[in-house]
Amino acid sequence: HVFPGNRTPNLALINLCWLCLIICGQRCKHVFLWFVEQEKDPGFWKEWAQRTLKNALTLQDLNKNVAKNIILFLGDGMGVPTVTAARILKGQLNGQNGEETQLEMDKFPYVALSKTYNTNAQVPDSAGTATAYLCGVKANEGTVGVSAAAVKSQCNTTRGNEVTSILKWAKDAGKSVGIVTTTRVNHATPSAAYAHCVDRDWYSDGEMPDEALQNGCKDIARQLFENIPDIDVIMGGGRRSMYPRNTPDVEYPGEKKHNGTRKDGRNLVGEWTDRMKDKRGYYVWNKKDLFSLNPNNVDYLLGLFEPADLPYELERNKETDPSLTEMVDVAIKILQKNERGFYLLVEGGRIDHGHHDGKAKQALHEAVEMDRAITRAGLLTSIYDTLTVVTADHSHVFSFGGYTHRGNSIFGLAPIISDIDQKPFTSILYGNGPGFKLVNGARENVSTVDFKQNNYQAQAAVPLSMETHGGEDVAIFSKGPMAHLLHGVQEQHYIPHVMAYAACIGQNKDHCRTNSGSPFLSHISPTLALLLSVKWLLC
Image (tube, rainbow, N blue to C red; front, top):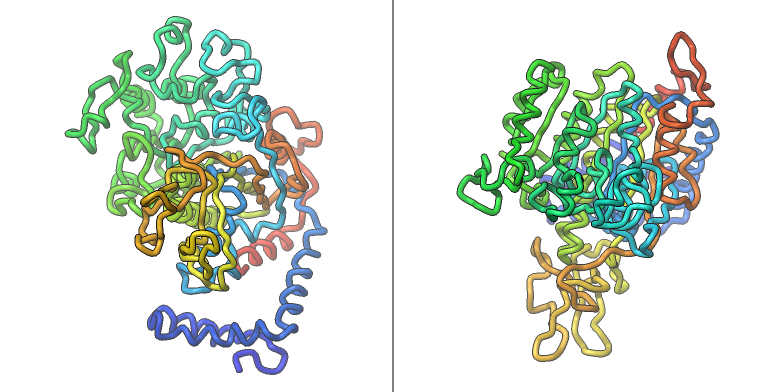
């Protein structure tokens, strides 16, 4: 028996079994039989629960430190069903059944729910929600960095309704700040950190109406470099918004769709490079150049790796494009040199795009990659002085069900057929989207297609060219100083207020005290901090 006597796991034997599985693949599936046998024993579940209880009891000693560093991981469109499905996928990629797996975010001690509605929308968009969790105020859909008094696409409602973000609060407090995303850097989520714009689609002046330009409104790419001109780290896509119209792209010079889009003739990348050349600032557009840099010798970094959004993780060229994890690694190593700490916004932005396309496999692999980035950030920081929050802006009409058996491929078929049309169906389905398909007037028989391929569009109940967001609450996972303040069911705009409170920045500073010029709160002991850090590494 693997668990003799008191049923304490033999870790050496477990590791040996995992090695066997890795080497032998399918031939070693029998090593899981002892897992099945253990689960038949009530003691297995009781002991597991008791271990969890003991861990929970340690949370009675609250971490009330000042958060030197604050990190927000935003999974765009990462609703609770997506989190659960990504957990199963992560486990299955590692040869497990999947359901019992833990995502890195699952290990965070505090979980809350976020109410995602916009001021004018029951089911929100990514712009109004970004304004909420970055600027601390709810806003109208389609607008970024402005209050609900601003009207979408009406330039003349911008002035006087601007709201600032936690990234600016952190910068004003002397912290280093960074933005890392798998979308373009002027997309909805990152733009709310620095821009004030009544239309999220005004990526460059080439996408703006003449009236808005004449009334003095600025495109989002321009605002990235002008509103907060000294953002320390910027990484993602979006090159074409930075260059004059018809300027060939450096990576795809023969493809006109990737050419520059600016009408004002400005080269924003060139302007940034000129401004930062004597400040240890570097511009890179590929993975090789990124990895050639020594973070210790870099104070400012602009990395634009694609003309628009970065490719899906499953389609990423691993030689030319960095992963989200790799970008996060470099960003933290640059930002953490600041003795006053840093604020970092990380977006797994293409989770959302996968769902909109009805491509669940793309979406879930994006979520798993973001979880890898969360793991990496945890290894580079400490829960003693770093508040890390993981959440989503909204959900999607994505679901999985059908009474699937334990260990069923998350992309597989349900074990039953429809009792209406007598056809099989995949566990994953969408409420609406491009996956709606009729063959000879009836639902397509999924057994006739390759439903496990990367770009398979899962069946949808209602035909739409693009699947929609979902309106249910999303999860907030948190760890580190003051993480316990993220609890219960909260309005989405509450999130940055907690993060600012923990870091003693922004408007909430009354609880802070100065001791030799440094913020001070009731500190947990260094010994407890060490034990907590070891616990996080082992769990």
